[in-house]
Image 1 (cartoon, rainbow, N blue to C red):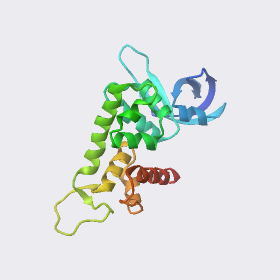
Image 2 (cartoon, rainbow, N blue to C red):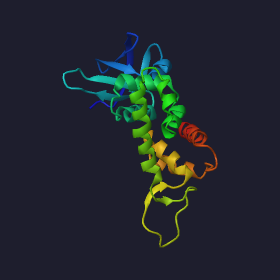
Image 3 (spheres, helix red, strand yellow):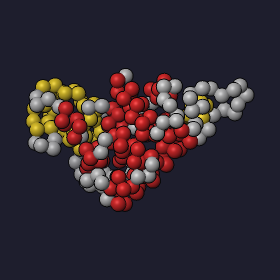
Image 4 (cartoon, helix red, strand yellow):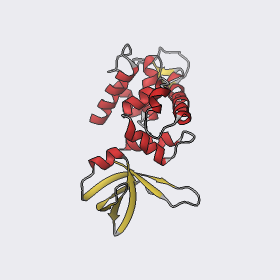
Amino acid sequence: MIAFLRGDIIGDDGDAIIVEVGGVGYHVLPSAATKAALPGSGQVRLHIHAHFVTDEPLRLYGFSTTSEKNLFQTLLSVQGVGPRVALAILAGIETEELVRAIATGDVARLRQVKGVGGKIAERLALELREKILTVGAGVGAKTAKGKTPAAGAAPTSAAPVGPLGEVYGALVLLGYKPAEIDPLLEKLDETKQFDENVRSALAALRRG
């Protein structure tokens, strides 16, 4: 399965680009953010999601970062969300705002995204919020400030508890690994709003 491409752009038909790798041209549909950042020509590096549906040709979707690719794949896990809708969501709302809307069940905000109807907005809010809460709600091996519980405590998972649990769950939902998230927990303030902490965490992860 194709997961990454590095090659030269040799064509652009508006929605898709042609990337030549080793003499082979790959037809890639990039996200709006990725497309806007691409050079008009020259070498590019793209993280690829290869999507195959029976009786349809294989389609390649390209992303400049693994986090955007992971978010795209997370959106695809929601019933009724296909690649085109997932791309429309990524193009129609900032990542931080999307996570906030999902985490708070803000269906009205999700419905404002072009291509997202009422049923899909409800599914996004329900199914993905449940994932956030599942990851961040359980009894964790860390407190909300990332400290290990006292000796003799019952064995637990590595997810934090308290207000930062949902932040942790949201970042996992976006595809970040616990090893990337854990160092940030001590720097976050559990008294701040969820979306503010998510914004701070994402900014730090992007810098890293």
